[in-house]
Amino acid sequence: MKSRNQIVFLFFTIIAILRVNAQDISNPINSLNEKKEIIYGFDNRRTHIREDNTVIYGIYSGIGFGKKLRLKVGFNAAPFERGIFRDNRDLTKKNRFYFASLGQEYDFFQYKKFGMTVYLQAGIGKNYYREFSPQGDVVNEGNKLIIPIETGLHFGYYLNSYLRLKTGIGWRFVKPEESSDLSGYYFKVGLGFNLRKYQELHSLPILEFIE
Image (cartoon, rainbow, N blue to C red; front, side, top):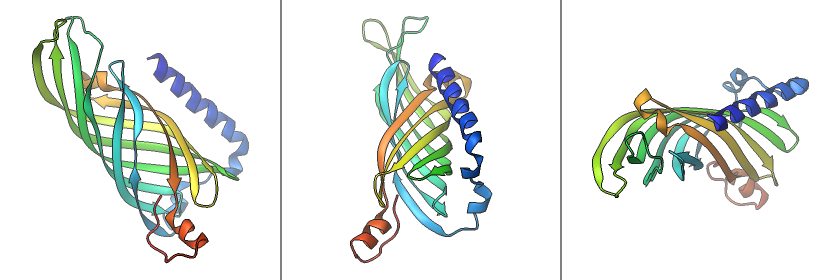
């Protein structure tokens, strides 16, 4: 709960600061009429599951509009069992889950090389779990439907014309209520690579744009 409150506070603090520079904030509706392109890539983010650190691995494909708005279809997985918290029955629950998702990213703020992106994604999938006694014996196992919803604020900085440093923070809500223990923060750090810019810079044959 404390981590979620800190993320929410940070999100609204940044939005308040950006109001001072409102002229640099763009409208997503305007992007729908701009040039379209195919996008695809990886969407890995670090997180925690019941007090156990792990990674959600993701891949996606979709359509970009004007290099600002991106609509994506993805597949996400936390394939390794995680969970160290003991419940009121003194059982430890280990989880691994998979889900398909629909999402959007919008680069709503850009100032020189620095940009900010709002991120929203929702999915549906299954959580496969096992419950262990204090002695390490499996006492229960099964799977349940999950509906994860992720929202966050991402940041980017262009290192050059084709390479961008990307980072972000956010929160994952998991429904129904019986699976809410899978909710938690996420953060990510990575690089975005613009293949078209790279090809143009090095006078290579132009292939599809990737980011």
